[in-house]
Length: 588
Image 1 (cartoon, rainbow, N blue to C red):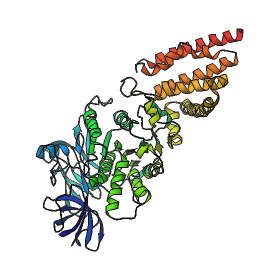
Image 2 (cartoon, helix red, strand yellow; image 1 turned 60 degrees about the vertical axis):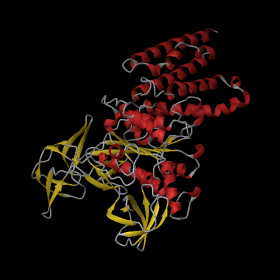
Image 3 (cartoon, rainbow, N blue to C red; image 1 turned 180 degrees about the vertical axis):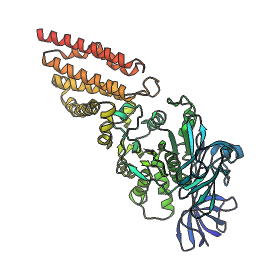
Image 4 (cartoon, one colour; image 1 turned 45 degrees about the vertical axis):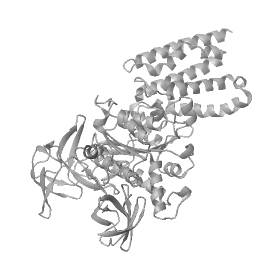
């Protein structure tokens, strides 16, 4: 037991802590506020407190729990809303109303609710850490797999199917040393330690999001890392909502770390109303929400990303594909900066701690496609997607630069596109994806080699448009050659007919890969046919005015069960109309 000698906001310094260790969770003062030891100097401990410290003064007692900050893992995680240190907000509301009181202690997993446990292992089975011994139908769309805690191994001595709480014994394990261990449906894991795996594989399967600018131009792989930087109002939250709804993952962990309270309120209101297109159930059936808004204690904001990614790793270890979405890592970095300043550490660039880049790397490095622990051969993936909110949209600031050096996909949101109502406002000249080459075999197998070629063609057209626009600003569009004017028109079609997408129109909010391939193919074939017609003397205004152009522009609103047939008709009409114009040009 120690005594407080200094209080500075969320930072508390206590002496007499010789029995404590780094990263231990402690209880501070009479209200037993929860805190974590950041560093030790002799018997003096610097502690970050995850709750408001007003009223705490020198002389107050500090008691160590002897264990690091950990999360409870088991049935009951899905559909729940936690704060940054995994306290269930709904459970807290039932105890103390709408306002969280300090020192309230509510277990992360409901201790009274019973779950129907179905044993899949049997007595006499040899098991090791990570092996699945039973299942629980946690929600209508997700089966929760009960695993042997990591580090344990032995023989199943007893196991029973039935209705149990998360703390009831469902099986007993006789270890190799002869000891008997009781197994429950709940286990704990320290949040700052990544869960182990057998092997990590290079990501080779794309994460399908249904967003054309992402899937075709800047794809992210399952088990990959991505960042969404952008200024206020550029659409970061809508992009993340679309990814949470449409991504072909089994579990979504959404971490609201430090964003405004009203923005998190929108998430809490909209997610239960969003329908998972794969199951027809509410999206919350496969979602864990962590709400740690900007007015909540700053230290808990720092812990929230570790809490979220540890929960994601747990579901990954079951063999599921998981997406962890952090909104936003800039606010998390600001929490690091505040705590670093109170610890009187030497500041780095813009006041951020010198270890900012390594902390960002520790978060994103926990993503990956892995072979799960256990004797069976199952694979899971964890995709980490972080929003970055640079002040004033300045991508040269430390958090954006540190993130760019780590992640392999960078979707740069542009306020000028957002002001023009071009959404998703991802700038195709500033964004990049380093997964293009590793995903090409998958594209060639499932879509054909033309998909990658069409992407390269589209990117080349958009880059050429950027160069031509500089000339247009000097001498005007009419001074360009017919071929260059056609390039500008085709680039406009790529931007407006393909990249632009409306998240609030049901038909346009999601495009599968086949549809994206056919849409881009229509635009490429239009350019090819027009260039051939120009060589025969066709007039530009005739080519730009064909009726098929309207069909291409409306192609993204064609119903999913009709688009292949409609696209084929648009293509035939386009060929016939351009051929007629080319024939007329030959006669002239």
